[in-house]
Image 1 (cartoon, each protein chain N blue to C red):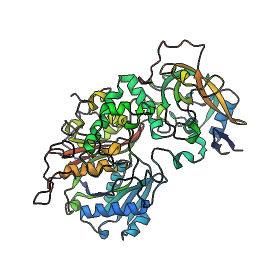
Image 2 (image 1 turned 180 degrees about the vertical axis):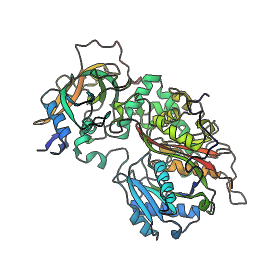
Image 3 (image 1 turned 60 degrees about the vertical axis):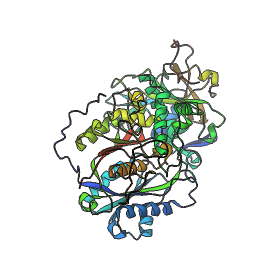
Image 4 (image 1 turned 90 degrees about the horizontal axis):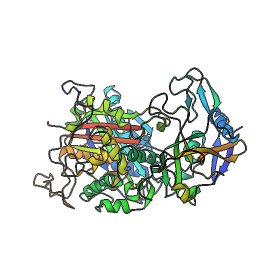
Amino acid sequence: MPLQGEYMGMMLTIDDLDHENLDFFRHCHEGSFHLQRGKTSGLLRYPPTTACPWTGERESEWVPVEGKGTVHTYAEVHHPIQPAFRDKVPYLVILADLDTQKGAPSEHEALRVAGNLMTADGQFAPPEMIRRVGIGTRVKMVYVEVADGFSLPHWTIDEDADQPETPWRYPQE
Amino acid sequence: MSLSSVSEIDASSEKFLRGKYAVCGVGETSYRRGSQETTRALATWAIGNAMEDAGMNAGDIDGMLDYSGNDSTFANFVAGDLGIRLNFYMDVHGGGSSIEALIGIAMGVIEAGMCKTVAIFRAMNGYSQVRIGGTGARSAVPINGDQIHNRAYGWQSAGQMFAPSFLRHMYDYGTTPEQVAHVKVAHSKHASNNPKAYYKKRYTVEDVVNSRIICKPLHLLDCCVETDNATCIIVTSLDRARDCRNRAAVIQSVAGRVCKPRADMHYQHGPISTVAGLYAREILWPNAGVGPEDIDVTGSYDAFTFTTMLQLEDYGFCKKGEGGDYVSSGAIELGGRRPNNTSGGHLCEGYTHGMNMVIENTRQLRGEVDDSCPVGPDGKKQHTYDYAEGGCRQVKNAELSANLGWANPGTGSAMVMARDHK
């Protein structure tokens, strides 16, 4: 069965033969972030792929991974391209380094997971919340439902974490 | 200026097809918005102009390559319109980083005996049909499978997709918006001396950083123009090129769509403030037998100001992290040590997915850039080298050029060309 749902006016579809993405987004819907782990490499990978990027092995298993990390970089969009995002600007696209497997298998690698900056209850972050976030901010995952069995992972500020005094932000507000 | 690890090259030995092939003809339509023509019609104009430039007729062309992204016509239609019978053609998917790679492919198929001369074109209504900035048709199509990991987040247009690299470069190296704005300042200065540029107005650093934010760190004036146009480059053996109407631009080296690790999602592999040029230069410079210090004029892709800066840095024109200093030093302006995008490039002349920068460097190496300088009794431009507004844009004694093409931070292409002295 394909997974399909309308999200902010965008039709999102995962074909029934796209097993990797079906599994990825199903786990998100269950509220538990999972990634594929190469059977012999033992390495996690993101986004879903059909083989291990480091060994090429096809065999993998889905394992739960803690949805916590640090903002590595971001894009702060002020001019919307997609009609769906017209009333959401400004919005933040975050690439966060997961704590798990950071700096492995080589120094500058990390599982850099994309998502928008959301409030803890899954609404687009208001401008005052965006201004608190920059490179170095500690974030945790939240999920937003697209359809039954299909949710998107997003990021929100981890209010329980030790935060940097001033995360790095683009100088012009 | 110190240069990075390119000093160990062996400049004395012949490498691969160095010096055996050439760009023998270049041509384009005007750069405009609202062409009122199909991409098929635009392509026939551009190819016709390139054939005229080369002094070739339909029987001289027997190969064709083109590239597009669901937004253009195909070689078989265009060849028929021009009376060209093809021994080889291929329509390739892609945008930026295609032209240098396709020139390499053209050399390969000619070397293999499959055809003799290849016309490469890109035809697009990037403003009036499929907008290159990502609005309209590009943002409306359904989102499937792997695309959900970016497009569902409003992370889709070129500016949105590249911004994370640009911001991280600022974070890693202290690069400032004002430094990078100098790219627009330089390219707009060049465009003001290019009668065919879409935007001919000169801009200041203040103009750039005070223009509205599109997607941090990109202001409106950090972004390229969207235009309707077609462009064509003809490649053949150097021997045949020497029979053509204009001086050949000799191809010294090509690197085609060289990728960082994890081309499927390059941000997984850091440092993300480093781009594919770091890898491409290991092919480009040794095969050309020269290094960045030898280059007189560059064509570094400028979909955005930051793109030009990142590539100049990773191809070794300055030290890693010093791209901001380099582009704001005056070096990339006409009259500086190594001007970049002397036509105004994508920021000002028009958007062609890399073609117009190769066309411009071909003309630079001929010494016959189409500026406003007077034409002498021999029918050639009498260049003044006065780069004041509305004046000359010919680089003095241009012997070697480098084109640095960009698909995204993770994929790039490049080419070195030399002036022919026969």
